[in-house]
Length: 285
Image (cartoon, rainbow, N blue to C red):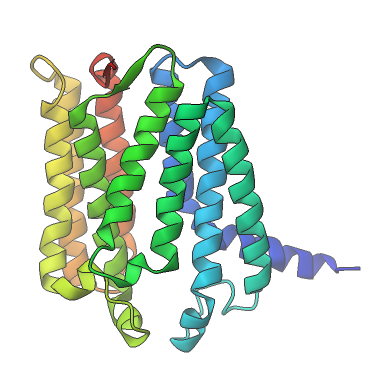
């Protein structure tokens, strides 16, 4: 029988391998958007559960697939390298979460469900190899845009997300991708991973990331019909400040994870702006 300390280490490893902070933020933002669109409690719960299990599968598959690479560069912050959980355990958990995600996604309806399954598949494709190519940004842009589309399609009414919403989400996602990659550029290069940020280099990526985040903020503020209200201006200005701070921190503190946390803050503020103009987020199909 497994001892309590071993069980505790396993649970800790599983939690750490989910990439808990971004997974929680993405899931929470999907829930907020679903509620703002008038999805009702049952649909909002389904959407939240589908996105949550999808995020679990993505996080666990990432650490499972990267286990040998993480060992090669001594990534002691990774739960497999730290001995908290094994790669086969993560593989089993990732596949179980993926199966649950498919069932929960399709429970919202065939079309929205398939859209979300494709979004999650894109993230798995990133983990499985696209991260090492010049196209590393594509799964972020496509999968997050499809996730937003899923939330809108699952809501009542025959609606799709407005074009400016899709553009803003794609810009946010690619900006977060660049920021998230910067601390690991050297480790990745040592194991043959050369995504877009690696090919651009630290300095160029450090400029590109905040530019993308600021552009996303501008689209969110300017996208809705009519002039932005005071709340949108304030949230947009704060988001822009966080984006610039993320870029500066990425250049000045190359190993810091703070820029990624700041990019998550930008995403939260952008969703706040979306909530202030929720009537313009979705348009008739």
